[in-house]
Length: 94
Image 1 (tube, rainbow, N blue to C red):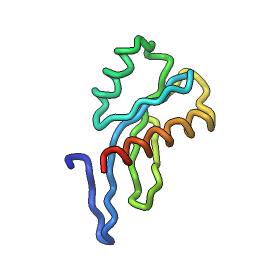
Image 2: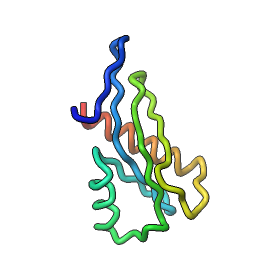
Image 3: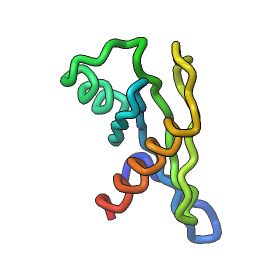
Image 4: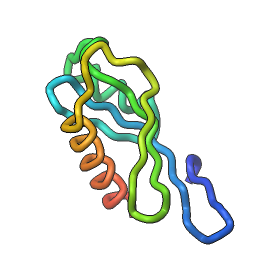
């Protein structure tokens, strides 16, 4: 795995990218380019999504950090949709 990191206590940390749209659609992939390609394929405008750097902390939890400043208000519902998509992405990869 190219984007994985390993710490001393045996838990793997894995980085990937995700995006959530203004209308609560989530996209998750290994690279920023893959996420942006998925968004472009659906014809979503640049100001209608926010891109996140996501990582698993090895304990079954997913953390995220916004890479770009959104032009809309990101609510808890957006974070829940993104977290669900990230957990599904990790479950399919293992």
